[in-house]
Image 1 (cartoon, rainbow, N blue to C red):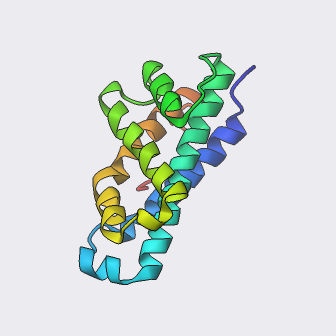
Image 2: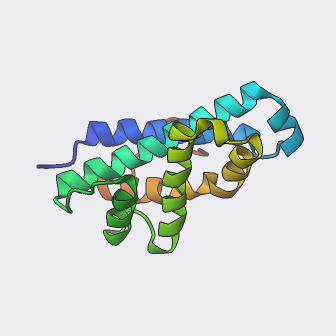
Image 3: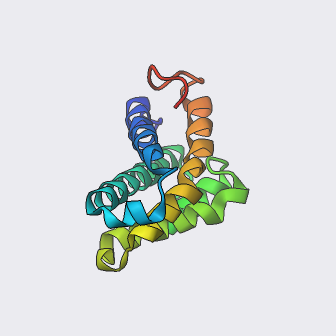
Length: 150
């Protein structure tokens, strides 16, 4: 089987779109962010979508390339790192991203605004290496949208 390039483009576009929108929160003070339940809810959901799109993208490539059948999100990250989709030095950060996604989905009542904002500030740029690698390997470096700065 070959990698479905339309699916790759779609997942990359979701990631880039969410990351671009989340940049709005980067310079926000924790108090302002945490007091606004709409900011927290929107940012949390955008992060969840970006992480899930990243995991779906990696799972698709792993399956189509025949690299194995990971049984968990953590395993998806480990296999993706093993095959260079995710830089080995960022593997643990991507594992942390999957943990954050799991908390948001399953322990949503324990997720605090400060934690969401910290995650944005510390991990938003972590999506870039994966996006760059996938674009280079599978799309020949083609742009994903009309905004080259994103």
